[in-house]
Amino acid sequence: MKRSRKVKLISIFICFLVIFSVSSCDVFASGSFSIGVGNSSLNPGETTTLTITTSNCAGVFSISTTDSSVASISQSREFVDGSYNIVISAGNVGSATITVTAEDVSDTEINSVTGSKSVTISVEEPPPPPVEQEPVENNNYNNYYEELDSNTYLSYLDLNVEGMTPNFVKTRTNYSISVGMDINSIEVSADTESMNSYYYVEGNENLVEGDNTIKITVVAEDGSTRTYTIVVTKSSDPEKSNAYLENLVIENVELSPKFQSEVLEYDLGEVEADVKKLNILTFPKNEKATVEIKGNKELKSGKNTITIVVTAEDQTTKKEYKLKVTKKEEEKEVVVETNALASVERTPSKKFSDFMSNLWLAIKANALLVLMYAFILVEFIQIVYLYKKLNKKDEILEKYGIDENGELINTRSGKRRNLENIDIPLDEEQKSLEDELNEKMSEEENAVKYEEENTDNADYNEENVSEENSSQDTNSNNELDNFDNKEE
Image 1: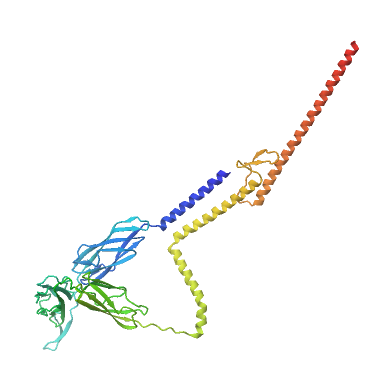
Image 2 (image 1 turned 45 degrees about the horizontal axis):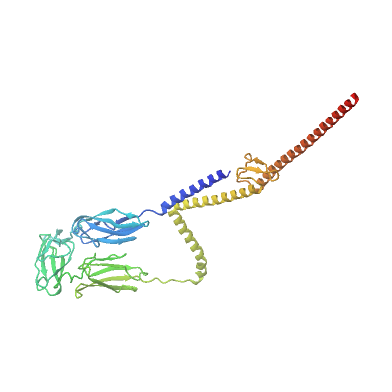
């Protein structure tokens, strides 16, 4: 009886452990990481963001590109715990593969996480602008459209001094270069894309210490113009005097125009009224340069100007990037006194409704886990219930003197009786169990009493037989004595 109960408890306990281990496997998932890119197809000069996202792990990741002239990256190695953004800048036309590799990454259980993820960036030339047609009146006073060339692009641009950045792309109009103190002039070589266009150069001679601006202006056949600008920084140590930013990223804000190191003014458009400051990320070309951001604390309603001051390593050369942003006006709350009480009365119900809605969404998102825990709870309640039932049965059996072998012990005579034929199901009430046991006990006592009475009657009969035999022997002896006397 006890053995079967132990087997049941052990089997239930094993089921409980299996269910718990399965649910634990879902909770403690192994670590992994993924990458995503905002835009995999770019035009020269544009930027995009590569996001590294970790799940149940953290560590150092390496980032590499197969062709930095096509797609350059802002960092080559970074510690990531959660998510991190890498800036990708488009250069020449072509394609490049960006690869993120887990170098020293481990999950929450201190297990090593390895592997790599890749994404391909394509850089394509933008389509040429449409050609406008202007009406021309001929001598016959008939109007017709004469096509005039409006192409203002350069097909080639080079300097007699190396170091112009970034590489030339016809759609990019801003470049920079650092030269030594011995450079007084720079020779510019260029070609126009259209044979009907021409260009002229300004500011490439008599360079002074500090910043100098060279302008290459392209004039199309129809009179439209495009100006390419090269900022020349003249100093004794060009590397230490580099105060340009490699990239500029602002969270949830798009720069206009697209960021270029040599462009110093940008329009950020409008931001919401609850925005107090912008999350600005700066990446200097020289890592030893210092960056200071002014005007980004407590933005006011209306127009704001944020200034980013980059100081070069030589602590002399500086560049100021200006960001114009407009903050929306705060909406004033209109309070209607007649509806004030009604709104107060609806608030608790609305909060309760929101709470139930959020709870339902959480349950739907974790349905499998919720079902497993519910099943574990039901099994636990069942184990407790069965355990209490078994204890109750043991107490009753002990009360009526039933030993571990399932035998009923008579407390008067000490005799045992096997009770295997007594079926006591667990789902019966205690009263029924006690009634059955009382009945069995009464039967046992009656049997014992009957046996005792039979034993007493047998003893009594034996005594009567002995007395009769003794009496017969006495009579026989008396008769023999009388016989002997007569013979004498």
